Image 1: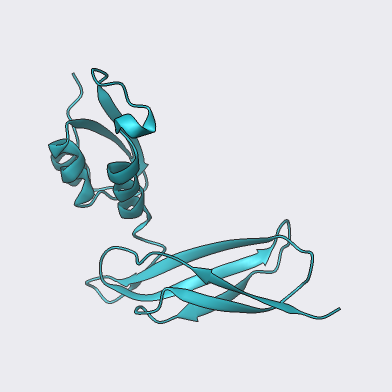
Image 2 (image 1 turned 180 degrees about the horizontal axis):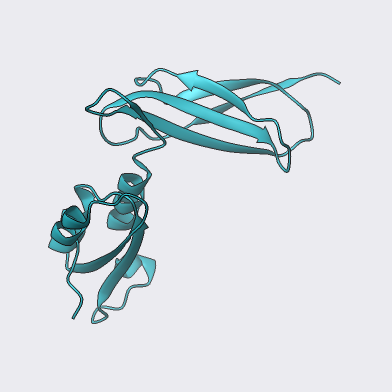
Length: 145
């Protein structure tokens, strides 16, 4: 059987990305393959794929932390908050005009989009996990009533 190629594209991640990792594997498979992509590129061609096979594909941005350690897969919280800012809590998405806008976020980090949600009248509650910065969560999210 002839091996196949496919192109994967994505929107740029927020923040200062130093590279992307495209992680892919046959659905249910154990062996992951990784393609590393420069930060200015938002697509990759995955080569040598098995025909008639479903693949699980994940694109992860890599960021550099202040102390010089690579922070892998970060930015997902930002991406999720941006998504709900743009796609949720809108009448086009089924939001009722007088309904309260409430979001619950389970995270180890909260960034700038939470302010945008608050400015749009969304009550955002966060559940901190791992090494979450409690002070930052309190500053960026709503207070329980």
